[in-house]
Amino acid sequence: SAGNRIHGPRGRKERHKLSFSLSIRTISSSHMDDESSLGSDSEMNGFTNDRHTDKYGFIGGAQQYSEESAQDVPPEVLRQREVKWLDMLSNWDKWMVKRHKKVRLRCQKGIPPSLRGRAWLYLSGGKVKREQNRGKFEELDSQAGDPKELDVIEKDLHRQFPFHEMFVSRGGHGQKDLFRVLKAYTLYRPEEGYCQAQAPIAAVLLMHMPAEDAFWGLVQICEKYLPGYYSAGLEAIQLDGEILYALMRRVSPITYRHLEKHKIEPILYMTEWFMCAFSRTLPWASVLRVWDMFLCDGVKIIFRVGLVLLKCMLGTREKLNACQGQYETMELLRAIEPRYMQEGFLVREVLDVPISERDVESEHHVQLKRWRKNRGELHWKSPPRMHGARAIMASEPPSRQDLRQNPTIIVESPLPAPQLQKGEKKGKEEKKSIKKGSMKKTPPPVTEIPNPYNLPGDPKLPLRDPQLPLRYPLPQLPLRDPQPTLRDSPVQKLLVNDTHLPNTPKDSHLPQQPALNDQPALNDQPVFNDQSLLKESPLQMSRQSLSSTEADHQDTYL
Image (cartoon, rainbow, N blue to C red; front, top):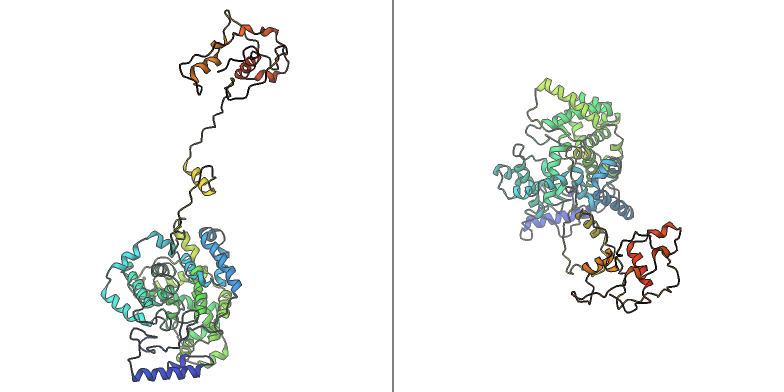
């Protein structure tokens, strides 16, 4: 039976190798690795030395990569998409509020593999949940847990994607992280406990992100996207089965009549589809594309995928003639044709299904009312379902700190930080921080008053001919008797009493300045009509008056 799982042109050679390895295993067990396993108890144990891993990490099995089930993106297109997604993740809140349609379109095209884990964490709201509950996962991981729940989890570990290299070894890092995530959830929601369908959900997340991120992604899927799916009684999944059944009447009436005729309940074929989010049904390339759209737009994508598969398998008269009873119909739905699950075909058909979140919600109210009428109230009251990333962000608005991308690996630079030398301009960031830090306004620069008297080291002012009239006439001031000297003037008092000139003893006496009455009378000076010249300061006017007497007193200085 294990040999039939290998497909392709080399199937005969691979089946021969497989039978040879099985015969070796039955003859001697000394050459086997006891810590490894490629499958569950019903699968093949041990592995061959010449195994090949596809680009998704699968060694074999039905979900292994093949060119028929996937479509490759050219490298140059992939690089362009990575640049766009990096920009979106750096400004996630703005993109979700203002350009959500663009985010949805890029999710429909497919998230780049290198950024898929980070994008899933942002779409689901797990990033915000982790930042708001720092240290919670470590706290839950350090606790013991319920022994009954842990025993069930231990039995399910080797059944999750047994042909993936991450979960191939018993006790390997993949199975250990899966155990940690599932145990932490049972402690986080003890009233809900553990459900076997949670294991493949957590395993898919672990293939793309660390254990702590996978835990918060699982929390968001169980509480926001699929609330009540994993609770006791599975009432939520039964209710969604009735919703799928009612939507089938609108999308494919012929399929609906066939299922109603043979009394095939939705719970018989859609339980694994919905509870595992098609992770155990579709080829892996299709699983990733469905999850990209599911985490962006919510559960309506799961309904659309189910409707597409049912319509493709039971939507024509020819196919219905081949399955005349309940058993034949169920066998047909368990073995869906690969062409209907091919990545490109499935995504196109899903996007064309005319089912919106409003249709899902309106049908949910109808079926809930019918459920209460026939079966009574629900025993498990789950929180309201959120239809996609935008609704989750609106219900729990994040802060900029919650969306900040923290580096996973921090490398300290061995070189010291460069220090700015004197006179070197600071960078823009430092200037901004200084402006933000200091709100006080800097005082205006103090203008230096020029000294009207020359110092020994200053160049001497040019001498003025006393016969020439003054260029700037002094204003006519009322004179008092006796006439004040220059020493008694306000300017000279300021200079003598408050100014200590360099290289001059503090107690030295300044030489006596000539009196103002030695100069020609102010009334004898010519007066100009230019009013702008009268606006000179007293200091400048005194300087001009002193320059007129320097011819007679060349040796007088301060």
